[in-house]
Length: 89
Image (tube, rainbow, N blue to C red):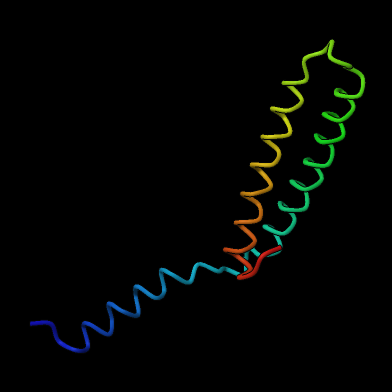
C-alpha cells in the first residue's frame, strides 16, 4: 500500500514535469522566433519572385522547399517560446 506522503511526492513530481517553462531561455527563444519569422518572409519573397518570373517556364520547387523548411523552423520557434516563456509569441 502506498503511503499518502509518497503519493503526494509523486503527484508533485509529475506536475513539475508538466510545467516546462524556463524563463532563463525565454529571451533566447524569442530571438530565435524572430529570426525564423524573418527567414519565412525572405523565403516567401524569393518564392513569389520565382513565380512571377516563371510564367510556367521555371520550376520553383526549390524555393517552395526553402519556404516550407523556414515555416517548420518558425513553428519550432513558436513552440520554444510557448515552452520557455509560458505563452505564445
